[in-house]
Length: 122
Image 1 (tube, rainbow, N blue to C red):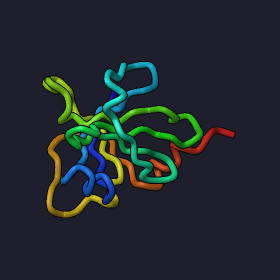
Image 2 (image 1 turned 90 degrees about the vertical axis):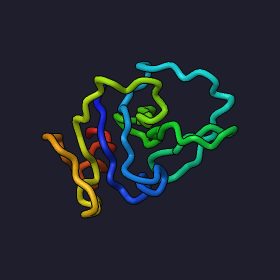
Image 3 (image 1 turned 135 degrees about the vertical axis):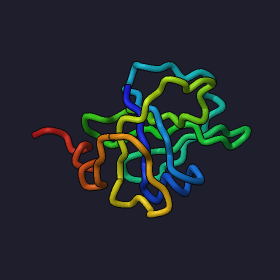
């Protein structure tokens, strides 16, 4: 599993800052209490899911057809313990505001590079 920061304007608005998420492929995690989760279709390629009782942002799920369909990006803030999880990538680096920067080396991808990952191979 990888973990990273999304700098897109939608994630920054949704999370109140940079979105830090754990990237989970289908079948790598079990979601309990799905009846308490509400999904909002936020784009052509993803939905944002939150607790319908308290409103906590939980994760976004890729809904676009292609190799990433069904993948989750779980907000690190909802984990009981995120110790030992190392940030490995930053996406939408071309939308990152000047007001912050992370230390350490990460894989950095622009929005165009991220969207290219959604395209099914021919």
